[in-house]
Length: 580
Image (cartoon, rainbow, N blue to C red; front, side, top):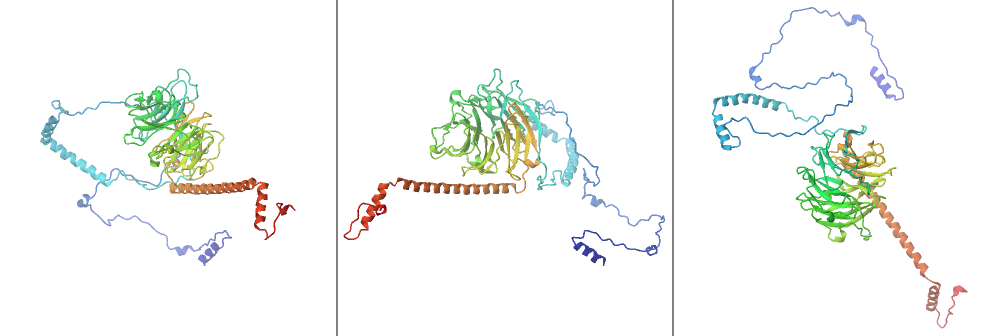
């Protein structure tokens, strides 16, 4: 009866009450009180150890034990003392040999080893050490110290609040402050160094006594530069060689191109002659995929693209003039370049100061087709241009007040950020997450966009500087560390939270589906616009035909018609019956 009553109460959702039932029982029904007395102990069972079984076991050391009751801990933050790292070298010489043995002579070493191996003390030492080593080997086999307890598990960071933590700031050591115009991370993620190019790009704004050096910074020693790059002119761009991290290429303000080897000193190993170089500052350059790893190309606002081989910088290997097919008389100045070998070893993209993005092919069948498709959309210089690392047919351009995402086959952007109240000066895709990209602005703010979660607003906005324009940006290949350069010469190193660089489940598939959906939508809009233009053109042609017919032509047609329809033996006058 009690269970039925309780079930009936639960079945009525409208009645929110809980029913209790009390059992009553008299004291005498519980029985007699329990009595406990002390009695002598007795052996119930005696199990003796078996020495034979001991050989099958080994003592487990160390032993990790987990207990359930632990003290409550709270998270606190504290500024610890800065640790300064320094590199020191030392010469290592092989030692331990007797004076009469020269370790550089193989015959002396072999003779001495044979002598030692015949000694009884040597054999006894090896036997004694063998038992200890065997015990350690068996212990390692019993305890896997490299076991990964959470292999294959993925953490869900969708609910956590994104953040970026400032680690340090690299400051230009020169008294005359210059802007951090370009940043390049070392391709070796274990060697956490980044090269920063410092320059004043304003026309005739370089004061006397300004230093021309740029620097390589070490994340572990941020107080002073790790290496100095000296050149005949200030560097506008610098890039690590992906095949040899000791080599860097740089484009200079006077148009020259040079390359440095950190093993050969602070001055460039070779530079291009100024009469064979760009006529304007070399704003961007990149290394090409090649067998030798010595080929690169540079761009400038003089409208020329030069291909170089660092083994011989006397003159460019090849050159290209940037003009559109539709307007061959206008030369476009280049300010940014994009090259990704997975999109094609000979294909590259150029961002111009006129706001046009050019798709180029170095090895086109027809020389006139080397400058191919033009993408118009920006109202100012295209400061940054990069393909999506997970889907190269989509690329992003940053200029004027917005960032735009394009698809190669379409001449209009498929996605566009909202217009900001200040200029966008750079940005890039995240190397680890397909739906995340970064933008920097002239008001000192960095935005992190995560299209996997939302497309209308940035996921995170960080105030890097107080009103100083941000001029350069780059992210390490791990996606965790970013460096933001500013016009006052500071380069801020920031660490992103795990949710912004750890790939989310099914993120790549979802982002690709979103890009495909927007591509189809844009194609449908283009087809509808094309049909509307064709319809308007046909309607205009019909109106033009009627406008071209004069009154005399209409009278002549009427006369011919009447003559063809005249009755036998009757004629009509030249006057039209319509005029009667």
